[in-house]
Amino acid sequence: MTHTVGYAPGAYDLFHVGHLNLLRHARNHCDYLVAGVVSDEMAERAKGRPPVVPLVERLEIVRSIRFVDAAFVETVPDKLETWRQIRFHVLFKGDDWRGTPKGDRLEADFRTVGVEVVYFPYTVHTSSTQLRRALDALTGPPAPAVSRRAGRPAPGTT
Image (cartoon, rainbow, N blue to C red; front, side, top):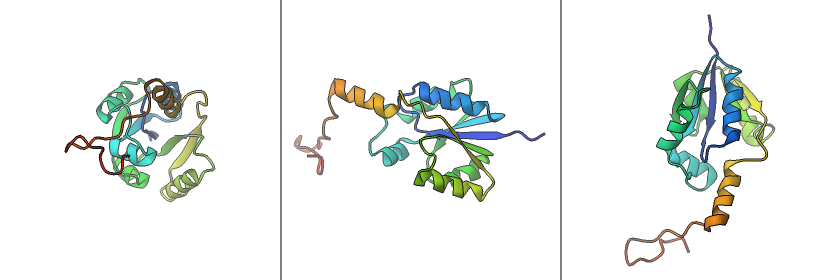
């Protein structure tokens, strides 16, 4: 008997109901669900800023969700490299990726190895980006990095 292994990658920063919905829907479409939690470095590269919640905590949150069978730290941007390590059958993404250059490239890459990309409805009313904006509005934007020498702003931060 073949089991369908699903893979649901994400930053999972500021975990919210949209993340939960994605993982719930994904689990309903596979026998075994692996959640890929991107490293802090990869999240910063993709979003242009570091995650609010550090990797070790994001990993613990995601691994504790009952729909998730295993959590995997994603450290390379090449999803096919991740597939070589996990060998999943289906990759799950929010439908905000559908029809975009990133989504089209993802589908084309995975078609070559027989992996289906399945999209689920994006939870429009909440997102980590919206939560982060709300936090910034309450606390103000992050202060520039300060050099350890002479208490001057770090180069390129002013």
